[in-house]
Image: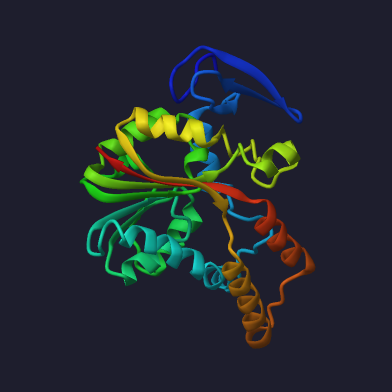
Length: 279
């Protein structure tokens, strides 16, 4: 790619991150893969091959354990949205996975719709009555709130994606985004060994400057933009409680790898959490 997929600048710098060739935009600070995958290939990959975590089996028990473990995170995210948009408004979650966040949001009264290319994840949403579509291209209507929880980095053309979202979000509506913080201490220290450096599925890498530029350039006012741990100690305690609950009652025990992964995730997984308002 010879131009930045966010700002279209051709002022680019070659960067080698481990063995992965990246480009850095000198205008907006975005990092992205030098060799971007073809759009059709990404559609096929996310429809049939993508899984959120490789160490989670495909049984519903293990997914339910993860759902319970993530409840503190979901309530925290909902609290931020409730302070800006009261329940009963329309919300769309782009990259909703198995619908855990939307399930909580509808319990609070939001009208929800999910976008999820994974066939198996859409089937899981359908079993609990969450409406879900495979792509943004099929969405019609206007929404008061759009959330992207660790999905924007999966889109190889962020400017195009945000323009498409602009056609769906109402004026004054809220866009909430979480992405891995490529500018964080742990990313810079661990580089290609960082947990969230996943070039086979994370095509674009954001720091504070590049995410702020992308949203402001497309007509958003930044309400808050923070670098934070994706997991809190409360979430860690919830994960431990879920592990004990499922081990005692269902005989499903977390492995030592699971526990180690949880602590590594707590320590090193730093994200950008941004809430913006469409002007």
